[in-house]
Length: 150
Image (cartoon, rainbow, N blue to C red; front, top):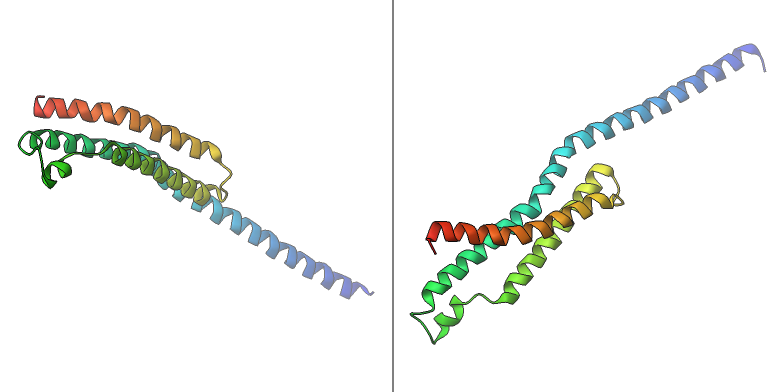
């Protein structure tokens, strides 16, 4: 090979290397920018189980308080059955809170880290859901006692 062909080959290889490295650096920059913009949504996923458990507990506390006021007037009939809140319904709603918090944390982990293997985030969200359910029922009962003077 003569020198001219060798120099062209070296130039072309340098160009190919520059394109490949440029593509890699572009990919890494876009990935870090996307991760930074998705951190807000990941932080919002922390408040999902707490908010859901609090709203669920407040709803059932209100329904229980209203059913307590309706039950003495209606002992029989369909209105008396509607006024009672079954415990199975409460349990299933809390299970849905846990399932929703698991799905939201799995989705945010997959979006931010590009993998679902970050189980620390899922575990943290599940612990927050369990703590939210435990504390939200107490807070909702306290709020009902304060507002209704029971």
